[in-house]
Length: 342
Ligand code: SF4
Image (cartoon, rainbow, N blue to C red; front, side):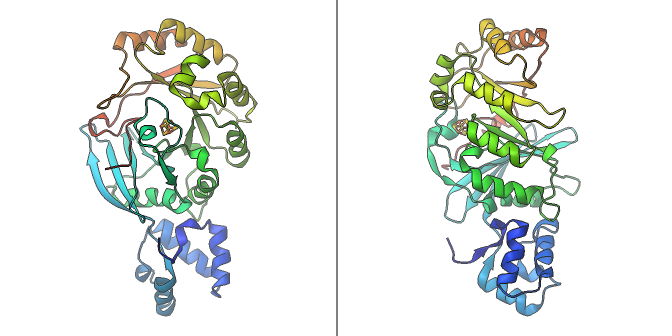
């Protein structure tokens, strides 16, 4: 990586301090933030209200882009998979999903992932490194540049490559920039962070930001969950759900529980009943995700009847249980299909 200071790794408060350190007037931070995030400019020379000297100085000492959008693949359903190349040559992927008025960007938080969930292609490729806050934020900036004139990213989900809470400090810093009025200015209500259930970090995060949480459950008993998600040996289901009960949620906010339906593994009527029992008393929403296959996958997608039955059992118990429509499966951009090696 270069020795240039990466300005997108600074929160707005850090940028103000840096501007002081380099002996510039305080209003320079405001100017820079406006160009970086409201105008989405990547070139110091385009920042026309900065003096020519300062622009030249910035070119010598600082940099803006943290990644390059190298390729965009568009599925028949309109879902776009974005392939980003990082400065050290690593790759990550993001996904843009349009649904009605909503345009959601799914961002990555790590290059690869160390958690090894058996059904996930990212997990199988292994872990390379954490992303920096700038690399997290720059996925949004680069995706914005790809949008049509009438498009706007309305929602963000941390459901791309990696476990966001395993990269806690950088994800928190990234969120500060994403939420700040003078940063990317997203409302916390429009941000969902997905986790396999790292209990201490879930508590820490809930004390910092009221972003929505999606917990990947994927099984209703410890034996099955440990088999498909090794993290369950560290944080078994009862501890995880007790932690969810203790989280202080904003009024009317619910926790989404993601449940990947794997044919013959966790999709029986008995599993659905167990799941209903497990979530009793929680402000829960259940998102059922029928497995999206990939070459060499060890699992199958359940039949449509099985999926519908599973949902019905939960609805009879008065849960909101939705079935996630598979988006981007044709370009390997659906859940669990992202990987970083080309
Ligand atoms: S599902 Fe998430 S936590 Fe599990 S291996 Fe894949 S990216 Fe990692």
